[in-house]
Length: 126
Image 1 (cartoon, one colour):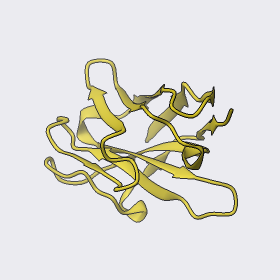
Image 2: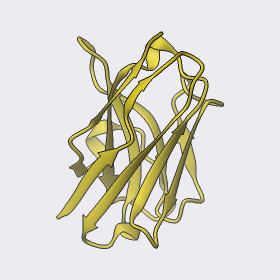
Image 3: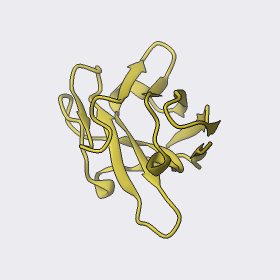
Image 4: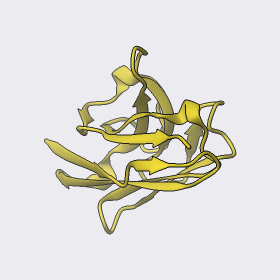
């Protein structure tokens, strides 16, 4: 079992920044690729970003490429999502997730992930 707890969400103005954190406990954090997903009201959950076990491979949704950065600190059992130049369409509940896949893999499919956090709300509004 892996327990995931997100933090760092909140209200921010368009063009602003936030950094989300996801702390993991349980089995060895470095055994899992990690991803961030988001779900806006009335919409399906969608992929945002992912990183491989060692952090050497990252993938991003086209909608956030160049604005968001995923990173991880295996010594702290934590994955981060730095979000810059935020837009109103980034408003959603953000979830982190863990996938027990191959070492050099940063999966984008929701069904590839085994464990999920409870989510943190991000609201971008003036």
